[in-house]
Amino acid sequence: MPMHSPPHPGSFLREEVLDANALAVTDAATLLGVARPTLSKLLNGHADLSAEMALRLEQVFGLEMSTMLAMQSAYDEAKVRREQSKLRLKPFRPTVAA
Picture 1: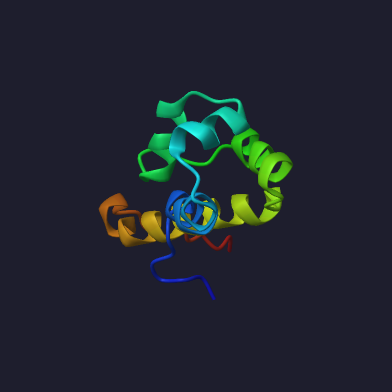
Picture 2 (picture 1 turned 45 degrees about the horizontal axis):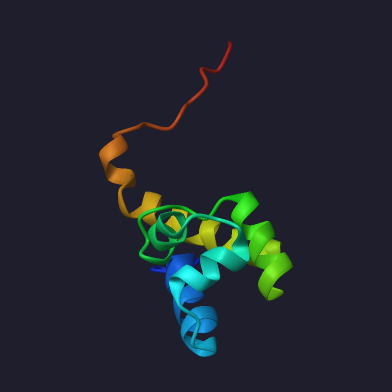
């Protein structure tokens, strides 16, 4: 069963990696080989976690790429489900041939 409101992977990274290791955003960005604004956007929930960034996190911090991408997917699914009524779609009902 999907979580109703899973956290953005950026908040997990901030708390469990950066804060837990007293690591500054600039230092983490350097370790990951990305620009500071790129990492900052992810940490603040203003950017999605890409597969490439998930791989970088795996190589640098030992976080499983698949786990990180699953976190992003769960976040995306919950976000879309909260707004699904805006789509105003009707289920397809095939006609029965006589």
